[in-house]
Length: 365
Image 1 (cartoon, rainbow, N blue to C red):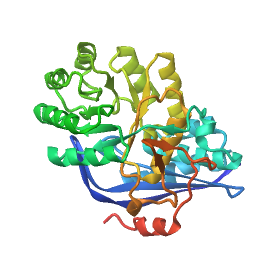
Image 2: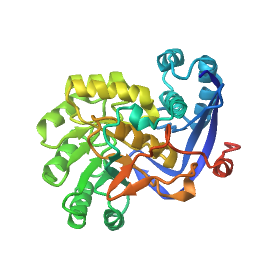
Image 3: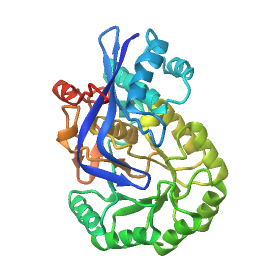
């Protein structure tokens, strides 16, 4: 099944409201649709997500990298030969999210060719996962009402964006604990923005109320990262320090993290599975974080989360149930507080061509 054509299409998906975190904000989903066509007509699709302030990849740069740098290296290869594909793409340095988008689209094509859903190809460990929703920065009362409403819809895990003001973050968690159900998981994402003393203050104040702590301290401050990890009784999970399999190996080696988070847009499925094997060897549980995916990207999270035993923590989602910003025809299946994988081949979704045309970006000016 030779790769015949690769196309990266810039899209801008509307958000119901702007979102904010410690190191940035977002008013729309400026993402990239990747379409790969094979010689037999099989098509694979994915959502590739640029984050210039995290990976250094912009939407225009990503489209150029996929269409003009990466595609010429792998067109003509067999879609099943993923090791060869990644060996060829390694000629272009970094560009993690561009490569991740190609990888996911190739897996989608493989699943369709075999007539098998991807979560089954990845191991088929479970048919559903526990979802976590992100509570973006904003007034405490607004965050509380959002959590209350999502709790009523079945969500039992929330990521609280923080990192700018320890006292305010403590107040947010304490207020949320008063309204969410007792079994609800709460964790703070500091986006590497706390000092050691700020992070220690938060962890100490929220002992028994905070389930885990995401990236409180910069990965360039390894001494304090390890000091904090060994000085508190709350597990620390990674994100920005876990870009590559080599990053994960290093964080495990210095013992800075108890939980490893991956994001599919930057690792794809191929390297995501390799990271899972590394985590299993070193007894590190995993979770899949959200890169603010729309419904298309969210389907990738569902399949990998269901397929891999090592992914034992709730997996993050954004507003995947927002039909106003979707490129696919299908809705994600959430029932009884769990998100279920589709049993259709590949990612199990089809493109809404009208939506693709509507949301395609024709100019960056």
